[in-house]
Length: 225
Image (cartoon, rainbow, N blue to C red; front, side, top):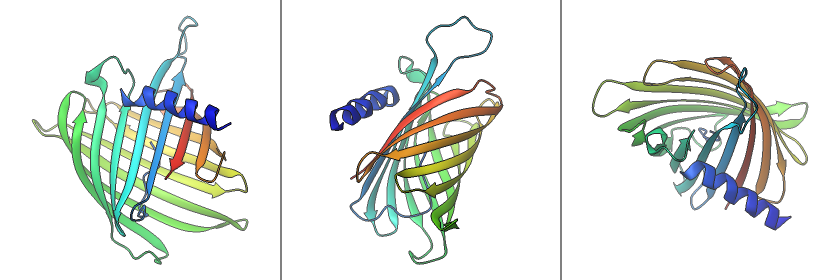
């Protein structure tokens, strides 16, 4: 089983390196979290062939009790470097660890759509019980501002998760506006099954509401260190 998990993780990392799981909660000093995913889309009204594939990798590492370093990488085509997004950032949690809700801000920079960008973000999260199960809602927003001109991209996602005995069920709404002002909105129901103490395998379906109407299969893996 461990060999299968490691092979799948390597496969997904390769897709992505050439979301998520960001939130307002601090990662914790010295702790690391990684999540890789691939979505497979078969566009409608096209001959049956290999799917379009989007890969992403998200990494977090706690460098202080309230300070988390993050890296967000993604591409719809690993062979085309001008489609690569690679952005690093620092997130600072403003609220105390025992607060009923969490608020964080982040800032950073990197590369997106063949140009250098700066990133600014705001996150909110709250934990509660659903039918006696640990649950939480997180809302994350960020903008990528081109350094060379006035172009900007905007992203917003809201996630609802419920912890079960052997995994987590989730629902996410995501909205995005690219540099060219093309907008997309999608809903992603998913289940993440726990494979070990610190590993989850995620399977979900991305349902496009606007901009990307073709459904997509999502497969991902999470790992904590």
